[in-house]
Image 1: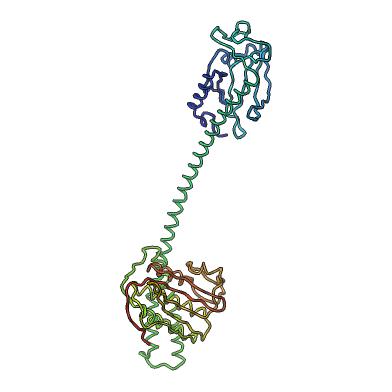
Image 2: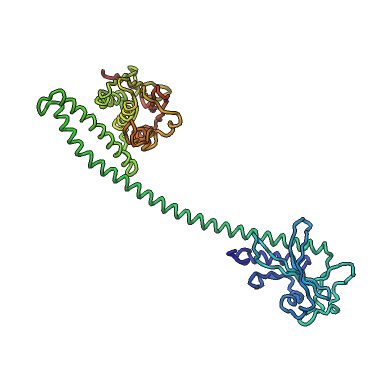
Length: 432
């Protein structure tokens, strides 16, 4: 054990216990720690003093180990000291968790074994040199059952004190450990936040640096494609079509990285204004035209003539819808159709994007909105991407107090539903 008895047990409480024992009247005791220091005593008499400090009667005293079964059924190992004149005392080891912490030593007494010994006749006991047995010192007389009961009660209270003390020490150790863990966790958290901020800043910096030259490349490609720099034959037109298609894919990838970087660093500003969701749908559909053409796909709309105004950031909602359309195009077979529909229910506007692609297995539905999640994580995966689109889409919709959820069946396709609150009524139509 790393702790001494005095570190574990409150001596004031122990002293109070001893006083209560002394007032019974009961056996006087003193308690000595493993270093031999006397911690406290009750009923300090010449008998205890003689027994503790003198060995003049050592030849007349024998010590034996004995066991007692208390009235409570507990077995205790104690040491009995008995003099030739009949005086008896006990050493009671105070043990907890297999370690000796202290020893309780009783005053001397007589055991009533039927010899009718009368308490108080100390002068005839012949205690030997150093034993102060004046007329004020009364030798207690106990029956065996009475003695065992008193010792057992003392041990119970002593056990309670030391167990309580040990629990207190353990609690302090736990508190110290928790405090150390808390400090370590706080330090780790600060380090992680710092690394996260650094990562976000790097992503934003690289993305900005990539976006500027990419915009220039796209601009010149569009000039060539539109014939502004001279006429083109069909093969050149097809080559530019492929080039612009991949530039737009790269643009969206960079935009996704910029969005994530900003989300982890400064956060996003949402310019919420009344908007017509039909205009967002039209703009997003036009933006993915090259991607649709590359796979010979088309978009079908199922939108009522009257739809409701919502409040939101049109640019952010445009970005969210682009991610859903890109996702639908990527996982759908060539020549298939994507359906965009709008319905209203209970002051909610639901915009749905349905594809007829490969679908999503049920156990992966809960993961698809995680950042950087890929349905196929292998290096040779069939479907390219960095796994940010659906995560960004969900973030944007939640910022609009909306919900994004998906229904999917393997080999039948998926339908993503954007559920947004309606702010006011509006009648509009989508241009053809």
